[in-house]
Length: 181
Image (cartoon, rainbow, N blue to C red):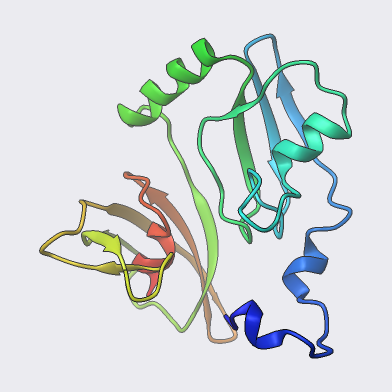
């Protein structure tokens, strides 16, 4: 959260997020001539960022000598682990994007939330918009927010934390984080 120019000339420890980027292996779950499905580890970007270039795409292209282009059909946040779907050509990407747009692709996530939920199941419908004062964060905004819907099931409570399975119907940026809050 600190601006880089404020650290100029200071000795500071390496960010744990930067350390988490190193030495991540990418497990291939499925591959054919159209798509590649991998298990993205937490702490690794899906695609290269502005400052951090080390990513799933970069590792697969560089270290595994992939001879074809890779196009992400979706992204997972840096600290999110899980299945990442990559197209090997633009025709496959277009077909996958249509599936996401039509919401025929089912997604589910498991999260550990601070606090104890009282409802076993539920649905969160809150419109989300970019918080321009704190990008890339999202906020609930009924004026300019886009429709966002998440279903959830409480899996259990563990020492003051709730383990929840999320089923996002829409795919807004940081939707699960905003709806969890």
